[in-house]
Length: 209
Image 1: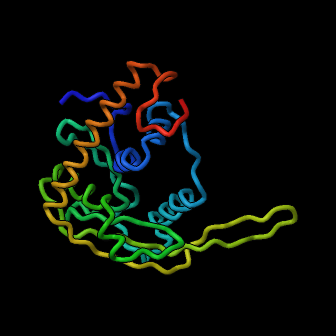
Image 2: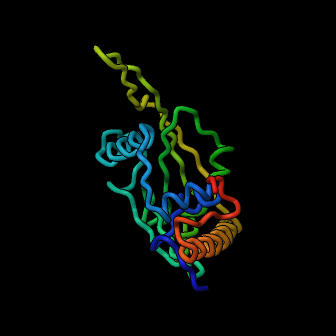
């Protein structure tokens, strides 16, 4: 399968964006329009650094940095970053910060987890069947200054650990999802290049003609 992709690798977030908002995907990956980080994403990155530095010993952590994964899946180049990875057990965990509580139902529906599980199995030949998602309760504090009011994100100190047992059929389903999405992206990007960015208007686009 000869693919023409806008980037060297596809990530889970990129594929998810393609399937939820093709216009946003095209802007980000075809036109290289950078989207500014929100206070939520910036806080998530900051709390992750603090976990790696050992500031919160009560939060499980294997190692002091994200673990990068790269692999070809059915001729599709895939990249992923594990928040924490136990190399010996081939088990991973994922950190989530949010104002709204995570639930087991929400964890069971998150395709990011079988996506990473599949990558680990393909690279190392096996994967621990159980992964962990750790929800870090977040609050917004409003700090009033002389001229402005600032919203500050904080970790409340409360966290909850969810476990999910990922089955083989879930990893196979993710492979199908990746290949179908990659083929669609490749075809769309090829048409984008052939027609020219200034005149390209796909049929499903919400952009004005």
